Length: 441
Image 1 (cartoon, one colour):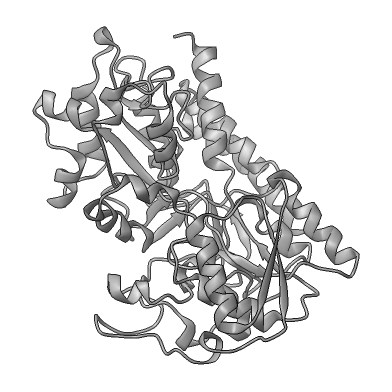
Image 2 (tube, helix red, strand yellow; image 1 turned 90 degrees about the vertical axis):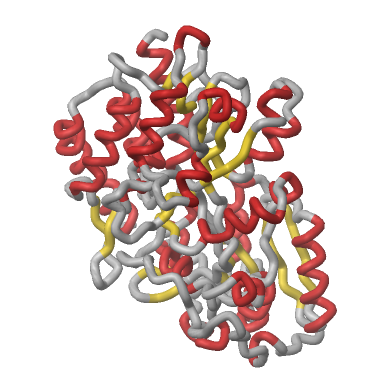
């Protein structure tokens, strides 16, 4: 494949993967919110039971709610007497619509601080702090599947929506567009190799074993590659940087962000990406795709599953022979933090006259799994395997001006062989400039 074509594919795919935003909090490895064990139960009082008769909350969305989400909203309405009125707008116009409502003194009440909306929308004063609702009885206990099902605010994910030591977004355990490693079960069986899940079950699924099996499954002669970064995938190689446990933006004790390219784990992640794409032994090809059946493994979101199963162009051999496993982590990832796609949170729009009702709505919604349309394609055993991935996430954090695009370009240059140390020195300046521009706007 020509280098330019390969680079174009890589850049397009990484762009989707890296435009997510992050909040603050340097250490998100703690997994439990409230204390408790298998029999622990959330205290169901306060926001859990409060009534809001006659209150109407206006909610702005960019998607049509699923049946499960709509049912959860109705349950809230029936229990509290509060009416939720939804309006749907294109994603691209979402923030402008909320800002216009505030300027017109007729603000929406419920907004979503999602992905690249943070921290710009907080700095622009679109949302109000929610510190007063960070109460132990409202916090999630992640010690078991039972306590997770009880609901509650996931304080560890909410750390990503913290700015200047104030919280701004309510998040549930499930408020993540979760990433997984898709793999072809038939190819592993034919090669006589242990599957990623078998490695994971024995505690030996890491970047070393991933590279080993990807090498063994790569056979350019028959058009099969160990890993896919090609078209029809929404991801690429970018997840192998957070797999080392670091992030390209770090935060000090006061929540002030700075570029983090000097971290040795960032260097290690970039070197691993370069190794995967070594021209002398490439395990990745820009045209090899999981949906097409020409790649043994691919990282993608769980949201990819409905596309995989409903795309008439996906061959039956793929549709009938796939499973998901965790993304392999580096042995040097001391926190075992898991790379993920977008995080979501509910925010209280500035000017909202019933902020407590919004907080109660957000708390109620933590009892559901959100708009997880992928679940219908998974068995209970698979969902039980996936559930722990949500516990300790490492969320990409580059939503500062053009930093996301700059990072895309940097990763593309890594793939095509540029010197990584020189790239790091080059991009430190642009990353710092974009962070400074954002926080000083």
